[in-house]
Amino acid sequence: MPDLHYTIQDNAGKPVSVIVKRDKRLKKNSRWVRQADGSLLVRVPVRLNRRAIDELLTQLTRHMERAENLAARRIDRDLQQRAEEINRKHFGGGLHWLAIRWVDNMQQRLGSCSRGGPTDGHIRISARIRNWPDWVVDYVIAHELLHRRHPNHSPVYWDELKRAYPLTERAVGFIKGVGFAQGQSFEADD
Image (cartoon, rainbow, N blue to C red; front, side):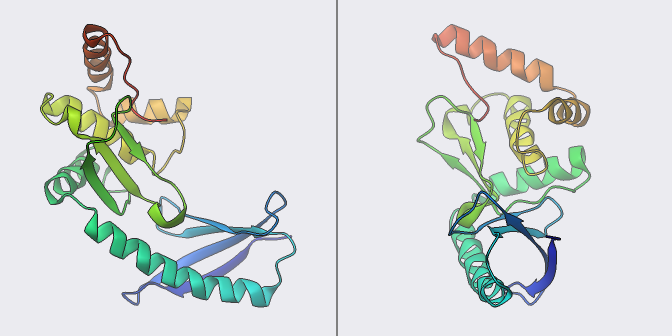
């Protein structure tokens, strides 16, 4: 079946493009994720009828509003400003996320970027790197921001990251060195 295209309004009244794809793997529940361009991709069970899709889109507007409210409570203003500058400088302002914040509960990972559901677009950065050199912290932020465009560590992802953030290899070396000195291995994300 062909994709369905809709336009809904967010809580600020701005139009949001929605692409609905039927997914044979889904039996009952639907899944949604915000795309890099700001549109929404909604995957629904194959047998979901149009009326149920319309109802789902109405619910999705409420889910988006709750996600934005959650993001507003979970944002670190200084880190947000830093991420916006990195986005402008290294990615031409083309990446979009809802919230970025420091967290204390990451032991192995240095950062994470969620995709889909109520925390879609939330980026978490480990507070343990807060005092590392700025260029290394900026690398971790750039690394997580780029996951908004590329969900995994594909060769395309690494090529774009190295092109956009020239200190990538140096920062990775720093991170490996710190990990070696501490007898552990750090991961930028899963």
